[in-house]
Length: 263
Ligand code: ACM
Image (cartoon, rainbow, N blue to C red; front, side, top):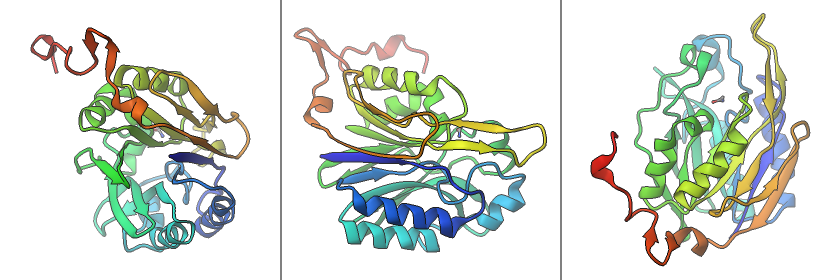
């Protein structure tokens, strides 16, 4: 399976420009699955809920989801992309999951980071593993990485790979995702952004880039720079993630002592 990410530097509020850039970049690369960053079309730092609402779109009936559906059909690619979603009342920090045959589903970020709590409603959909021509793909968004239960739940649900749209501002995530992959024997694609947003006085945000693809043994198959936009695609073998044997006598899931855990 060929999987990739696009690392972007969106212009805040310019959905058309940010989308057009993806529409130009993506078809130039051959992949079965592309992951795009969190809030890839709008930018990240909303000043308040009203502003987030004004830039959010319904999923799947919004213009950006429809454009991604055309792109997925044209390129015969699965696409997972972070979007600001509105359902008329609430605003969610969501990801849309699309395939060559159309809309598949969505995920709403469970763990909102810092001032996101002023702009978004916490996710209210269960964690889910999506089938993509036999590949089992779990979805989580950015700060969800900080709660290992998220990746563990997706792995226990059968995910071979976690798609992880992100807008990272904390330094630890790229290294922490190596541990998430090791502790679950899964692949992970973190699609991040670069650049800075200073839309709230005194709260300038610097995004750290370093989008990456990590394998179930914790190898970094590719990691992008911290400053440049980038597109990367790698070939992965999903059977690695389906083998949970650690030694002839240890199985990653069957050896768990669930009676002794405080979960
Ligand atoms: C984040 O969750 N975007 C830091």
